[in-house]
Structures are given as C-alpha cells and as structure tokens.
Length: 493
Image (cartoon, rainbow, N blue to C red; front, side, top):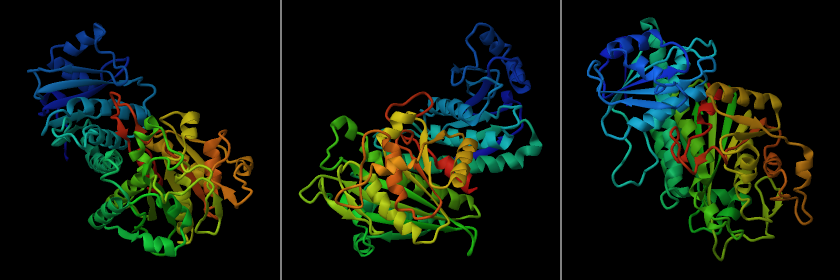
C-alpha cells in the first residue's frame, strides 16, 4: 500500500474516499471548518440536526460532494475530545477502513486529527491510524472465491504541519509494517488446520525468515526426540502430522547484548484429545496456534523495523488429535528438564507443548522471556474476551510489559501467582500433574509453566480471549486479531 503526504486543504485532496474524524461534542477544527465551508455548511447542518454526533465509531457517508475533489466523504466519530487514546483511534479508523474497503484499487485520503492531549503525539496518532487502515482494509475471508474486501491502493495523509512531515512519514511507515505484521498473524490464524499444520507453519516461517533477514532453524521430530522433549511429543503422538519447533533469531544489537526470548504455543488444531471437546468448543480450534503466529509476526516486524535488539523467537508446533496412539489419561510424560508429568486432562495440552520449548530456550542463555498462548478458558472467564492475562516470576520485567501494553493501546491485566496454585499441581505418582481444580485455572496453568523457566525473568501472556473474535463488529473482523503484537514491538523498541 503506497503512502503519500500532503498539506493541501481537505477540499482539494483527490481520492476515491476522504476520511475525516470528528470529536464530540465541540467546535469543528480549523481544517474541518474549512471543509464545511467548501460544502456550503452541510456538516454544520448535519450536526445541528443530530445526524453528526462525533460518537466514537459512528460513521456518516456523503456519497456525492461535487464541491470537493474527493469522490466520496466518510465522517467518523472520534468520541470525547478530553479522553483521546490509541484504542479510540483504532476503533474509529478501523471502522472507517472496514466500511470503505469493499472495492478493489481504491485510493484513500485521511485527515490526521489534531489532539491537544500531550499523551498523544502526532507520530503516535499517525502510526496508529496507518496500522488501523492497513488492518481494517483486509478481511478474514481468506477462502472467499470472490474477495469482498480489498487493501487500499494508496493512502494520502493530510497534514496540518508541513514541518512534521518527516516524523509523520516515518511513523506511517512503521504503522504500515505493524499493520502488515498483524495481518500476517490474522491470516495464519484464519487458515484451516488442513493448510496450517506443524510442517507448513515451519515452512512459512523459513520463507519469511529468508525474506526479512532472520535466522531460522527447524527442529524436526528426530531432533525433538534427541532433545528428550517428551512432553511435547506426548501431545503430538496422536496425530499423523509430526511436530516441529521453529527457532528464529534476530541480532540487531550485536554480540554480547541482552537477549529477549519470545515463545509461542502452536497447537495447530486442538480436538482436546481423548478429553474430547464438544463441537461448539472445537469449531475455532484452528486458532490454538495464535501464540506461535504472534511470535512469527513480531519477529518479522522487528526485522523490518531494524530494531537494535537481540531476540529469539520459538514456536512449539503440534496437533492434539485422537487415534490409537494418542496419549491417554493417566500417562506420565517426562519433560525435557526431567520433570515427570501425570496427564489428567489431554485438553490441557498447550502447557505440555510450552514446557519443553521453554526449557530449551532457557538453555540458550537468554536474559528474559515472554510466552504467548491461548492457554485457558479460565482466563477468559476472569477477564473477558478483550483483555490478556499476565503472570510473572519477576515483577520488574512484568512492569515493563504492562507499560508497553499501555503505550501500545492494548489491554493487559496481571493475575496472581500465589504458591497455593502450585500446591494443586502435586501428584501422587509423578512430580506434577497437568491440571488442578477448576478454580483459578489460569493461575494454576501459569504455575505449571513456571516450573520450566528456571530463574530466567519470565512473563506468561494468556491470549485465549483477545486473540480470536468469534463474532465481528463494526471495528473488528471475526477471526484472528493479532492481539499483543503491537505490545511486543513497543516493548522491544
């Protein structure tokens, strides 16, 4: 998508669509007032009639405005001018992009709103709008025979300050990279398990690594057995699709600098195993690899942005299926670090996959770790579908992650890691069992993972809620969302 920049009056900007954001209530900005004058006061009349309120996400289309250069005008509400934030901008401009991206080869012009709140700089606004337009213009219909959504051919950003063009240009370029990386995650999550399984995910990772200058190592089943990853192998043994572990490396800071590790759960389909899920719960289980997809998307983003950091991305990939060779209730698996695990629920498989990958990454001598996983329904019960749960063994590291999420406009809430949760994992026949009681399930799962991170500062992000939207809305498509990619890039920046 080509990005262009202009300081022309809004009425003079040529495009198929001109998108203008309006706050509510309040006076029009200088630029919007000038546009209204060109329109003969039409905007003010709509406002006085109550048809143009500026309510967040509300849109109004003016399909034919011969007094201006753009063919069509879309007005979108930005909400309360005293409470602007990135999430509001995301909702408004994603809504606009979804609404106008129904035809191919459209050019868009977008007025960057003026915000007086010092917490939002012009570059933050430009970056978020660019990301939102990129994400909003790509729909979830990867298998539609006739696409009903189309990426824009070009976007012209209308600036009010010519002196800021260079900074805004850089912010828009960064926003486009973030948007394309989010769309990569969304595509991988939205594809079926017939297309995305351990081998094909690994192949895609290798292709992207070559394209963007990452190092990629694919651990096949032979190597996984040599590494004694018995926990991951236990999950994978019921499937005809062999497991894989993908290791991506980016060395932007040079030798001797701290290394951050990102670890993603990549269960490419989760039937629940012998603890079989009901149909309604299994319908979206192609999305159980969203953690791994987010790691891959983040690694491509930081490589494209040339961030001065050293990062290892690791994806544990397996299918959790039913067959005569599937792992069973009561089995005892031996993880890579020697921990024995009594399996009392084969549908608590994600933690078993992550256990061995976390142990492997610890031995890579990383300085800090984050894992991302669609791990528990309990986290969704606790926090809802839009908030990520955070768990940690190091509060300072967790504080950095939470701060990055706030700056990136994503919602994360820290949940407890009390020792009483670990008590529920005690087993009579093995070192631990893979589930506890139904109460506090997200924290119990996090305490399980903690046993495989040694002393490395670690944050676990449970993205079971926000990583996949079962229903679409005016500002967000159904399917994969790319949740937490913005946060990770902000953190690593």
